[in-house]
Each structure stands twice: as structure tokens, then as C-alpha cells.
Image: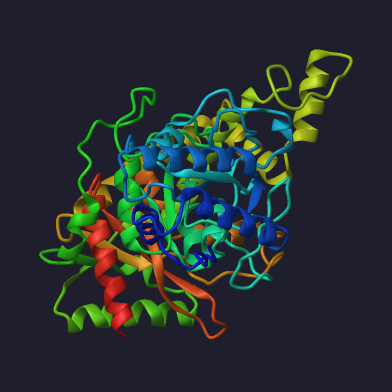
Amino acid sequence: MELSLEKLKAREIGALIAAGDCTCAEVAEFFLNRIESLNPKINAFISFDRSAAMTRAERLDSLRKSGKSKLSPLYGVPVAFKDNMQLKGQPTTCASKILTGHIAVYDAGITIKCLDAGMIIVGKTNLDEFAMGSSNENSAYGPVRNPIDPSRVPGGSSGGSAAAVAAGMTPLAFGSDTGGSVRLPAAFCGIVGLRPSYGRISRYGLVAFASSLDQIGPFALDTKDMALVLKATAGYDRFDSTSVNQPVPDYYVSLEQGLKNLRIGIPREYFGEGIEKAVMEAIDDVIRGLRSERIELVDISLPTTKYCIAIYYIVANAEASSNLARYDGVKYGLRIDADSLIDMFCATRTSGFGSEVKRRIMLGTYVLSAGYYDAYYRRALKVRSLIRADFEEAFKKCDLIISPTSPSTAFAFGERTDDPLKMYLSDVFTVAAPLAGLPAISFPCGTDPSGLPIGLQLMGRYFDEESLLRGAYHIERMLARG
């Protein structure tokens, strides 16, 4: 059977399988062939196991024929995972030399959820080393290229997952979002990326960068697919101490309500200087469209916005310094032998970590050190509480908050690597949601004159992904109507 599936949504592929128009094995082979063909150009995948994927697909076909399996809407649909999530029997590299040779001995919570839903895991995707970066240029396995324009970055740190979906190498993928690492790549690659509320999706088996900020999130081609994949993977996990036992709504069913009875807040701090003209015009067009549909729009203020980047990089780097202390050459991964234990630690970490990871470890160690803890880290935690309070006050006036996802479209390789501050400012609109633990979604709302995608961000109340997806779906349809 001649298949052409690369532009189909995940639910459309699931429907074809359910109707018997194609088999899980045919679908898996199609996408594995695309990965083999396109990956040398895009470098979205660090590893993929054709044999394991095909064995899984054939078993799913067998179960479907026997009538012993419950067909979910995503049964037989391929999915990929950022390579900082554990997949039993497969390498977990975090795109770092220091995890050379490490093989996962258990499945992450997200892996188990996807398998339970009948999905087929096709591979592990590239990322900024230990998820530290905004461009996916910091990988020990080489940079990921943006499928829209290979001279541009795909965004980071989950650039491999975003590029894989945008290039039609898989219809679904997962990344992790610490300060914007799902939403920024989604914006740069022209797809949908969701950071759920902290605690909505299990973090069990996710390699930690900054534990109070990290959250796994999905990539999809549209909001309907996003609703399906979130429904399938959200929920409490007793193995994750940060997982919250909250009911999981049927996000897909509620999409049709759109923005009915929802108010959208426009934060003045997110519409100031530094935003590219094309980005501002695209967001303004959306706001004008909502006004014409008589959606209630309210002006709001988030006064602590100006502190968010500084607070994020203090908190995240402090937690990274602590979390990455475990990579010392003793227990697993890379080991550089030396004359003494201290020399071995130093040689292993010097050789194993890339420059951006070293920079963040040193910054984090500095803000936690004696004499500086109170001046930086403790003060940052106090301001973080003020950021949360800002959002609580804002949500008294509105249900969703609209903004650009990024002040720019995808930038060229090398454009910001020599200026860390300029690179960090790529996250200026995305770091607030993680600091407050809130859900946020990015989806395309147009292109700039070069044809590069522009991302629109919506933020919602804690554990109100339902309203977030309703709002995104409404705007998605509005844009489709022109």
C-alpha cells in the first residue's frame, strides 16, 4: 500500500488504523523511513531503534485483529521522546558526553502512559545538553536544524522533538519545558507546544535540570491532537513526588466551547520594546480579530515581569548545580581515570560537560555559596512568590493571558552563541509560567516576511489546561477562516 502520512494529524492516522485502511506496521515503517531519510539533514534524532518499533507495531496489529485491545484515538500512532526521558533498554544521553554508555533500566512515567495508549515509540530526539539552551546549538551530537529554514535554529532546548514533528518524521513528540523549552521550539518550527501545569504530567524518569521548574510537555500539529495527547498522558503518578492528584478532563470534547464565557488579559509588560515588527503585527492582528468577535479583552499588569529573566536564571542554575553534582564518573557514564579521586572528578566533568552546562553549574554554585546565598538565591525565591502573586491578581480579571511566545522568529545559527545574555533573553516571555507553575501553550499565528513562523502564547490558571486548549482552538479556527 502506498502511504503518504507525513502531513496527517495524529488522530487522522489513528482513524486510518481503526478503520483498517492501514496497519500499525505500515505506519511505523513509513515514519521510520522518513527518519532515516531526513535525519542526516535535520539531526532531530539522536537514536532510533527500527527493530523495537516494528516489533511493537506488529504486536499492536496482532492485538487489534484478535479484538483483545481497546483502541484509543492514538492507537498505533508514532511518538518520539526528548533524550532526557528514560526508555528502558535504550540510551539516555541528555545530549551530553558525560552520559556516554548509559542505558536506561526503567521506563519514565510518560513512556508508560504512551505505551498504555497504544502509541509506537520511534526514537529519542536531540536537545541542548541537559536541556540547557534556547537554540539547540549546545548538543554533543551536533545542532538540530529548523525544517522551515535549515540555516535557522529550531529553538531549544527541545528542538529535536519540535523539528521532528514539523518535518513529518513523527506526528507527536514530547519535550521538557523548564523556562520555555517546549514553547520556544514550537514557535520557531510552526507547530503547537504545551507546557502543562507543574504536576499535571508525571516527571518520573525525566532527568532533572531544575526540579522546581521542569515539566514534560507534548508537541503536535494542531490543538485537537494536543487535546488528545494530553488526555492520554496527564494524571497522577505515585512514583513522582511532585505529581498532583487532580481529575483529568476530556479536553477534546470541551474544545468546541471555544472562548465562550472566557476573558483574555493583555499584559502591558509583554507588548513593549524589543519585539520584532512582524511578531507584533501578527499578535495585534489576532487581538483585532478577537475584538471583532466580541471576545472580552481586558488590560492587565504583571509588574514583576522585568525581574523574571534574572529570577529564572538564579533559581534554575542553582538547582542545576545541585542536580548535576551526581555526574562524577563514579556511578555511570563517562569516567576519565586520574591519579586521585579529586583529579578523576575534575577530569571527568571537564571532559564530559559542554561549555553552556559548565557556565550554568558555575553560576548556580556561586549563588548558593556562603556569603551569596542570601543576596541572590534566597532573594530570588522571595521575588518568585511575588511573581506568583502577580498572576493570581491578574486572573481575578481574566481567564487567559495572551502574548507573543518569543520576541523574534527563528534566528540564524551562531547569531547569539557569543552573547549569552542575548540568548537568555529569547525566553523573556516564557520563563514566567514555570516560575509560577502555570500552564502555557504556543501555536502558530502567522509568518514573517521571510516565511518564518510566529508563535502566539496563551497562559492559564493552575490546572486549567481545559480553558487554555479551548482558547487556542478558538484562535486557531479564527486564523483558518482568515
